[in-house]
Image 1 (cartoon, rainbow, N blue to C red):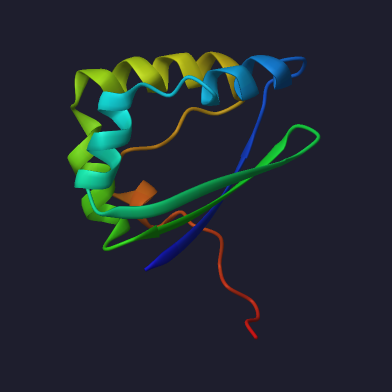
Image 2 (cartoon, rainbow, N blue to C red):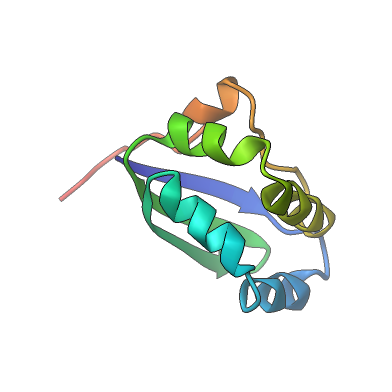
Length: 103
């Protein structure tokens, strides 16, 4: 399945966010892949971030990551850099951007 997300950086945190993503911990990358993600791309326009995730099942991916210490640490770091922390609740599993058109 393909999931698109929109998040927003906190003002002035752009370079920190980009630096953090040059240093994503290998155990987190392995856990994301083990959770069923095949690709995860992030684009930035100003403070707006657009994520495109290709995965087996987004809800399953979130559930597999929710309680992992490496992900909890990563989400705390990302929470300092973004306006709103990622939602790992059941509702968050359906929070992707709606597809309006596809070619």
